[in-house]
Image (cartoon, rainbow, N blue to C red; front, side, top):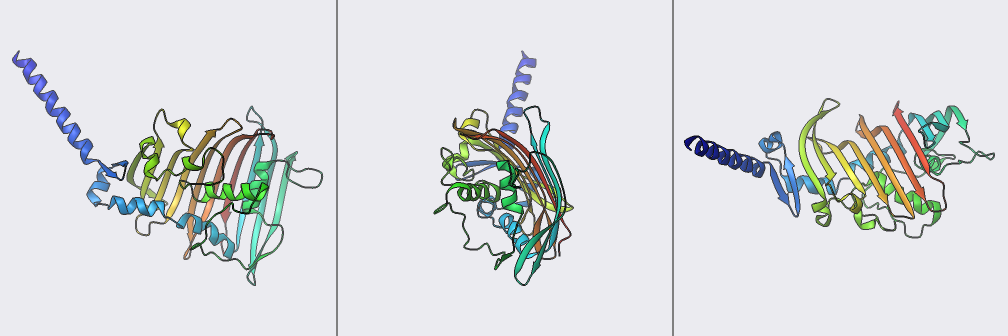
Amino acid sequence: MKTFILFFTCLLLHLAVAAQQNNDTSVTVGKKIITLSEVILNNKLNIPVFIERIKTDTSFYKAFRNLRVLNFSAINDIRMNNSDGEAKATLHSKTKQIRSANCRKMETIEEQVTGNFYDDNHNYNYYTAQMYASLFFTTDSVCGEDNVVSGREFSTQGKSGMEKHKEQLKMLFFNPGKKINGIPFISNKTAIFDDDMADKYDMSIDMDMYNNINCYTFKQTVKQGYKAAVVVDEMTTWLDEKTYEVLARNYSLSYDAGVYDFKVQMEVSMTKFGEYLVPSLIRYTGNWKAIFKPRERGVFTATLFDFK
Protein backbone atom coordinates (compact mmCIF):
# COMPACT_ATOMS: atom_id res chain seq x y z
CA MET A 1 0.00 0.00 0.00
CA LYS A 2 2.79 2.39 0.93
CA THR A 3 4.49 1.58 -2.36
CA PHE A 4 1.29 2.37 -4.27
CA ILE A 5 0.83 5.70 -2.45
CA LEU A 6 4.44 6.63 -3.13
CA PHE A 7 4.05 5.74 -6.81
CA PHE A 8 0.77 7.68 -7.08
CA THR A 9 2.31 10.72 -5.38
CA CYS A 10 5.29 10.68 -7.72
CA LEU A 11 2.96 10.39 -10.70
CA LEU A 12 0.94 13.42 -9.57
CA LEU A 13 4.12 15.43 -9.05
CA HIS A 14 5.34 14.43 -12.52
CA LEU A 15 2.05 15.49 -14.12
CA ALA A 16 2.06 18.76 -12.20
CA VAL A 17 5.60 19.56 -13.33
CA ALA A 18 4.75 18.62 -16.93
CA ALA A 19 1.68 20.85 -16.86
CA GLN A 20 3.72 23.71 -15.45
CA GLN A 21 6.36 23.22 -18.15
CA ASN A 22 3.66 23.25 -20.83
CA ASN A 23 2.27 26.49 -19.42
CA ASP A 24 5.74 27.97 -19.32
CA THR A 25 6.42 27.13 -22.97
CA SER A 26 3.31 28.56 -24.58
CA VAL A 27 1.74 31.99 -24.82
CA THR A 28 -1.53 33.25 -26.19
CA VAL A 29 -1.66 36.16 -28.61
CA GLY A 30 -5.24 36.99 -29.48
CA LYS A 31 -6.62 33.50 -30.12
CA LYS A 32 -3.28 32.10 -31.24
CA ILE A 33 -1.54 29.64 -28.91
CA ILE A 34 2.19 29.67 -29.69
CA THR A 35 4.75 27.21 -28.36
CA LEU A 36 8.09 28.76 -27.41
CA SER A 37 11.43 27.02 -27.15
CA GLU A 38 13.56 27.40 -24.04
CA VAL A 39 15.96 29.77 -25.79
CA ILE A 40 13.04 32.03 -26.81
CA LEU A 41 11.82 32.05 -23.22
CA ASN A 42 15.28 32.98 -22.00
CA ASN A 43 15.56 35.77 -24.59
CA LYS A 44 12.26 37.24 -23.35
CA LEU A 45 11.11 37.91 -26.90
CA ASN A 46 8.08 40.19 -27.13
CA ILE A 47 5.74 37.71 -28.79
CA PRO A 48 2.85 40.04 -29.75
CA VAL A 49 5.33 42.42 -31.41
CA PHE A 50 7.03 39.49 -33.15
CA ILE A 51 3.73 38.19 -34.57
CA GLU A 52 2.82 41.67 -35.79
CA ARG A 53 6.20 41.91 -37.53
CA ILE A 54 5.49 38.62 -39.30
CA LYS A 55 2.02 39.76 -40.38
CA THR A 56 3.19 43.11 -41.73
CA ASP A 57 6.54 41.98 -43.19
CA THR A 58 7.55 43.60 -46.48
CA SER A 59 11.16 42.35 -46.64
CA PHE A 60 10.16 39.16 -48.48
CA TYR A 61 8.40 41.04 -51.27
CA LYS A 62 11.05 43.78 -51.20
CA ALA A 63 13.75 41.20 -51.99
CA PHE A 64 11.98 40.33 -55.24
CA ARG A 65 11.41 44.01 -56.06
CA ASN A 66 15.16 44.52 -55.65
CA LEU A 67 15.67 42.30 -58.70
CA ARG A 68 14.17 45.07 -60.82
CA VAL A 69 17.04 47.46 -60.09
CA LEU A 70 20.02 45.08 -60.30
CA ASN A 71 22.06 43.22 -62.86
CA PHE A 72 22.15 39.46 -62.25
CA SER A 73 22.42 36.08 -63.91
CA ALA A 74 20.04 33.15 -63.49
CA ILE A 75 19.96 29.47 -64.24
CA ASN A 76 16.40 28.36 -64.96
CA ASP A 77 15.30 24.74 -64.88
CA ILE A 78 11.66 23.89 -65.67
CA ARG A 79 10.33 20.34 -65.96
CA MET A 80 6.80 19.32 -66.86
CA ASN A 81 6.15 15.74 -65.73
CA ASN A 82 3.69 13.01 -66.56
CA SER A 83 1.68 11.07 -63.97
CA ASP A 84 4.65 8.74 -63.39
CA GLY A 85 6.96 11.64 -62.52
CA GLU A 86 8.88 11.39 -65.79
CA ALA A 87 9.75 14.58 -67.69
CA LYS A 88 7.72 15.09 -70.86
CA ALA A 89 8.90 18.64 -71.60
CA THR A 90 11.82 20.63 -70.17
CA LEU A 91 13.63 23.93 -70.42
CA HIS A 92 17.10 24.60 -69.08
CA SER A 93 18.52 28.04 -69.69
CA LYS A 94 20.96 30.66 -68.48
CA THR A 95 19.77 34.24 -68.62
CA LYS A 96 21.26 37.57 -67.74
CA GLN A 97 19.45 40.73 -66.73
CA ILE A 98 21.08 43.97 -67.80
CA ARG A 99 19.96 47.26 -66.30
CA SER A 100 20.94 50.53 -67.96
CA ALA A 101 19.47 54.05 -68.10
CA ASN A 102 16.59 53.16 -65.76
CA CYS A 103 15.60 50.21 -67.99
CA ARG A 104 16.18 46.48 -67.75
CA LYS A 105 16.23 43.74 -70.32
CA MET A 106 16.97 40.03 -70.31
CA GLU A 107 19.41 38.18 -72.53
CA THR A 108 19.27 34.41 -73.01
CA ILE A 109 22.83 33.14 -72.92
CA GLU A 110 21.97 29.50 -73.59
CA GLU A 111 18.87 27.33 -73.76
CA GLN A 112 18.08 23.64 -74.13
CA VAL A 113 14.49 22.47 -74.68
CA THR A 114 12.95 19.01 -74.89
CA GLY A 115 9.47 17.75 -75.68
CA ASN A 116 6.61 20.09 -76.53
CA PHE A 117 7.67 22.87 -74.18
CA TYR A 118 6.93 25.42 -76.94
CA ASP A 119 4.35 25.37 -79.71
CA ASP A 120 5.18 26.10 -83.35
CA ASN A 121 5.04 29.86 -82.66
CA HIS A 122 7.44 29.57 -79.70
CA ASN A 123 4.64 30.16 -77.21
CA TYR A 124 4.52 28.16 -74.00
CA ASN A 125 2.44 24.99 -74.18
CA TYR A 126 2.14 24.85 -70.39
CA TYR A 127 0.41 27.24 -68.06
CA THR A 128 3.04 26.60 -65.36
CA ALA A 129 5.82 27.65 -67.72
CA GLN A 130 3.85 30.70 -68.77
CA MET A 131 3.42 31.76 -65.16
CA TYR A 132 7.11 31.22 -64.44
CA ALA A 133 8.04 33.34 -67.45
CA SER A 134 5.70 36.11 -66.35
CA LEU A 135 7.52 36.31 -63.01
CA PHE A 136 11.14 35.88 -64.08
CA PHE A 137 11.50 36.51 -67.82
CA THR A 138 11.20 39.69 -69.85
CA THR A 139 11.00 39.75 -73.64
CA ASP A 140 11.39 43.51 -74.13
CA SER A 141 13.00 46.37 -72.25
CA VAL A 142 11.14 47.43 -69.12
CA CYS A 143 11.69 51.01 -68.00
CA GLY A 144 10.81 53.28 -65.10
CA GLU A 145 10.71 50.63 -62.38
CA ASP A 146 11.86 50.89 -58.77
CA ASN A 147 12.10 48.63 -55.73
CA VAL A 148 9.70 50.60 -53.52
CA VAL A 149 7.11 48.47 -51.72
CA SER A 150 5.52 51.09 -49.46
CA GLY A 151 1.98 51.79 -50.59
CA ARG A 152 2.12 49.07 -53.23
CA GLU A 153 -0.70 46.54 -52.90
CA PHE A 154 -1.57 43.55 -55.02
CA SER A 155 -5.00 43.82 -56.57
CA THR A 156 -7.06 41.92 -59.13
CA GLN A 157 -9.37 44.88 -59.67
CA GLY A 158 -9.77 45.63 -63.36
CA LYS A 159 -7.84 42.49 -64.35
CA SER A 160 -9.14 39.39 -66.06
CA GLY A 161 -7.85 36.23 -67.66
CA MET A 162 -4.11 35.66 -67.52
CA GLU A 163 -3.38 39.04 -65.92
CA LYS A 164 -5.78 38.30 -63.07
CA HIS A 165 -4.28 34.83 -62.52
CA LYS A 166 -0.77 36.31 -62.48
CA GLU A 167 -1.80 38.80 -59.80
CA GLN A 168 -3.34 36.04 -57.69
CA LEU A 169 -0.19 33.95 -58.06
CA LYS A 170 1.92 36.88 -56.91
CA MET A 171 -0.28 37.21 -53.82
CA LEU A 172 0.25 33.55 -52.93
CA PHE A 173 3.94 33.70 -53.80
CA PHE A 174 5.00 37.00 -52.25
CA ASN A 175 2.47 37.38 -49.43
CA PRO A 176 1.70 33.86 -48.17
CA GLY A 177 -0.53 34.01 -45.13
CA LYS A 178 -2.55 37.04 -46.20
CA LYS A 179 -6.14 37.10 -47.39
CA ILE A 180 -6.45 36.88 -51.17
CA ASN A 181 -9.59 38.24 -52.77
CA GLY A 182 -10.92 37.01 -56.07
CA ILE A 183 -10.04 33.30 -55.85
CA PRO A 184 -13.27 31.27 -55.56
CA PHE A 185 -13.77 29.25 -52.36
CA ILE A 186 -10.41 30.06 -50.73
CA SER A 187 -10.18 33.84 -50.24
CA ASN A 188 -10.78 33.66 -46.48
CA LYS A 189 -8.71 30.49 -45.99
CA THR A 190 -5.26 31.95 -46.67
CA ALA A 191 -5.07 34.45 -43.80
CA ILE A 192 -3.24 32.13 -41.40
CA PHE A 193 -2.13 34.93 -39.07
CA ASP A 194 -5.70 36.01 -38.33
CA ASP A 195 -7.47 34.90 -35.16
CA ASP A 196 -10.26 33.34 -37.23
CA MET A 197 -7.76 30.71 -38.42
CA ALA A 198 -5.84 30.37 -35.14
CA ASP A 199 -7.58 27.21 -33.91
CA LYS A 200 -6.57 25.36 -37.09
CA TYR A 201 -2.79 25.66 -36.65
CA ASP A 202 -0.01 24.62 -34.34
CA MET A 203 2.46 27.51 -34.06
CA SER A 204 5.96 27.65 -32.62
CA ILE A 205 8.92 30.02 -32.33
CA ASP A 206 12.51 28.87 -31.98
CA MET A 207 16.08 29.97 -32.78
CA ASP A 208 18.26 28.58 -35.56
CA MET A 209 21.26 29.37 -37.74
CA TYR A 210 20.72 30.17 -41.41
CA ASN A 211 23.77 30.87 -43.58
CA ASN A 212 25.73 31.55 -40.37
CA ILE A 213 23.18 34.15 -39.26
CA ASN A 214 21.23 33.85 -36.01
CA CYS A 215 17.56 33.59 -36.89
CA TYR A 216 14.16 33.32 -35.33
CA THR A 217 12.11 30.52 -36.87
CA PHE A 218 8.35 30.74 -36.92
CA LYS A 219 6.51 27.57 -37.93
CA GLN A 220 2.81 27.03 -38.59
CA THR A 221 1.41 23.57 -39.28
CA VAL A 222 -2.23 22.72 -39.88
CA LYS A 223 -3.76 20.60 -37.14
CA GLN A 224 -5.08 17.14 -37.85
CA GLY A 225 -8.66 17.30 -39.07
CA TYR A 226 -8.47 20.85 -40.46
CA LYS A 227 -6.62 20.24 -43.74
CA ALA A 228 -9.77 20.63 -45.84
CA ALA A 229 -10.48 24.01 -44.21
CA VAL A 230 -7.16 25.70 -45.02
CA VAL A 231 -4.96 26.49 -48.02
CA VAL A 232 -1.58 26.89 -46.30
CA ASP A 233 -0.74 23.46 -44.87
CA GLU A 234 2.62 24.45 -43.46
CA MET A 235 4.90 27.46 -43.49
CA THR A 236 8.30 28.00 -41.87
CA THR A 237 9.95 31.41 -41.92
CA TRP A 238 13.53 32.25 -40.95
CA LEU A 239 14.01 35.87 -39.81
CA ASP A 240 17.28 37.66 -39.11
CA GLU A 241 17.50 38.07 -35.34
CA LYS A 242 18.74 41.66 -35.66
CA THR A 243 16.90 43.08 -38.70
CA TYR A 244 13.83 40.80 -38.80
CA GLU A 245 14.32 40.43 -42.55
CA VAL A 246 13.00 37.17 -43.97
CA LEU A 247 16.06 35.12 -44.97
CA ALA A 248 14.19 32.00 -46.09
CA ARG A 249 10.70 30.60 -46.29
CA ASN A 250 9.30 27.15 -47.03
CA TYR A 251 5.60 26.69 -47.57
CA SER A 252 3.14 24.04 -48.69
CA LEU A 253 -0.25 24.90 -50.16
CA SER A 254 -3.11 22.65 -51.20
CA TYR A 255 -6.84 22.77 -51.80
CA ASP A 256 -9.53 20.83 -53.61
CA ALA A 257 -12.51 22.93 -54.65
CA GLY A 258 -13.97 20.38 -57.04
CA VAL A 259 -13.74 22.60 -60.13
CA TYR A 260 -10.03 22.99 -59.44
CA ASP A 261 -7.42 21.53 -57.14
CA PHE A 262 -3.75 22.16 -56.43
CA LYS A 263 -0.87 20.96 -54.29
CA VAL A 264 2.19 23.20 -54.27
CA GLN A 265 5.46 23.30 -52.35
CA MET A 266 7.81 26.29 -52.51
CA GLU A 267 11.19 27.12 -51.03
CA VAL A 268 12.84 30.53 -51.19
CA SER A 269 16.35 31.34 -49.95
CA MET A 270 17.72 34.88 -49.70
CA THR A 271 21.19 36.35 -49.78
CA LYS A 272 22.63 39.80 -49.24
CA PHE A 273 24.26 41.83 -52.02
CA GLY A 274 25.52 45.00 -50.38
CA GLU A 275 22.49 46.68 -48.86
CA TYR A 276 20.10 44.61 -50.96
CA LEU A 277 18.33 41.48 -49.77
CA VAL A 278 17.69 39.34 -52.86
CA PRO A 279 16.42 35.81 -53.60
CA SER A 280 19.20 33.40 -54.52
CA LEU A 281 17.28 30.14 -54.86
CA ILE A 282 13.63 29.44 -55.65
CA ARG A 283 12.18 25.94 -55.86
CA TYR A 284 8.63 25.05 -56.84
CA THR A 285 6.86 21.71 -57.13
CA GLY A 286 3.24 21.89 -58.19
CA ASN A 287 0.40 19.62 -59.22
CA TRP A 288 -2.79 21.37 -60.23
CA LYS A 289 -5.94 20.98 -62.30
CA ALA A 290 -8.36 23.70 -63.39
CA ILE A 291 -11.66 23.24 -65.14
CA PHE A 292 -11.31 22.98 -68.93
CA LYS A 293 -7.51 22.66 -68.60
CA PRO A 294 -5.38 19.49 -68.49
CA ARG A 295 -3.62 18.62 -65.23
CA GLU A 296 -0.10 20.02 -64.97
CA ARG A 297 2.73 18.67 -62.86
CA GLY A 298 5.61 21.11 -62.88
CA VAL A 299 8.93 21.49 -61.11
CA PHE A 300 11.11 24.55 -61.45
CA THR A 301 14.28 25.81 -59.87
CA ALA A 302 15.68 29.31 -60.31
CA THR A 303 19.23 29.98 -59.16
CA LEU A 304 20.18 33.66 -59.11
CA PHE A 305 23.77 34.88 -58.84
CA ASP A 306 26.38 37.39 -60.06
CA PHE A 307 24.50 40.41 -58.74
CA LYS A 308 25.87 43.78 -59.79
